[in-house]
Amino acid sequence: MTTSAGVNRPTTAPDHRSAPEPGTGAPRAGLHRVLIGARDLGRSADFYRGVLGFEEVPVPTPGARPARCFASGPVLVEVTEVAPDADNGDWVDDDLQGGIRHFGMKVGDVDERVRRLEAAGVTVLSPPRDVLGDVRIAFFLDPDGTRWEFIQGNLAYQHVHSPALAAAEAANRLGPQDPPRFDHVAITVDDLPSALRFWHDRFGFQVIGDIRHHDDPRGFLMTYLQAGPAVLEVFSFDVPVTPHPVPTAPGTLSGLHAIGLITDQPTTPVTVQDPAGVPVLIGGVR
Image (cartoon, rainbow, N blue to C red):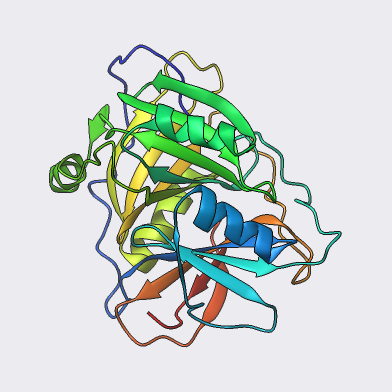
């Protein structure tokens, strides 16, 4: 999540509660993995396994390029080797750009986790701070420019759309000694209703709640959807959003790349794009 301190004032929120159930026969799905491009797999392993404390696990669906896979919680982090001269393309650290913005993980003590990052020479983008939603967060980069977030605590939504999902989230709190746990993928969209229809109607993702930044002149709204074992955090604004930079060829882009879903029905692996241009890999081995 990306937040700043603000006043929690009532506001008119989109009514997601009346959204239709997923279409008959549509498989329900959940977030299963995130895909990252890396120029040096050994360096990535040192970071995810050594610095963050993830466990290395088998790659679920080996492809043409070498890859390594790491887990800390229910979602896999799949790191695929890219060309030595690959870069982050047109991706910029600005949430007004569409597409994938960052990946987030829950921790029990964000300050201690950031001290460990700094001791290891990791680039910390923003130090720990308390933000809107009653959580404490910090942002940092992996060796190839993937933007990550640490979150301590559970969100206090301004508008709760599913009390059951919000209560389940609130009951699952990490202690200071617990390892990090993958929590969410954040994306920016230029058309929130279209995005919610795509994720809800096609995959059954339910809206948990939302938070609006009343003091942000851009009209910043964060909407949270339950994506199986993790959360999809959807950013939308009242000002224009720039397009998502989609990679044109495999192996050319380092950093943030795509997200993968697993369904509750046998599905031939396929890649689609959400309305914001986010590459979504559906199917594969659970």
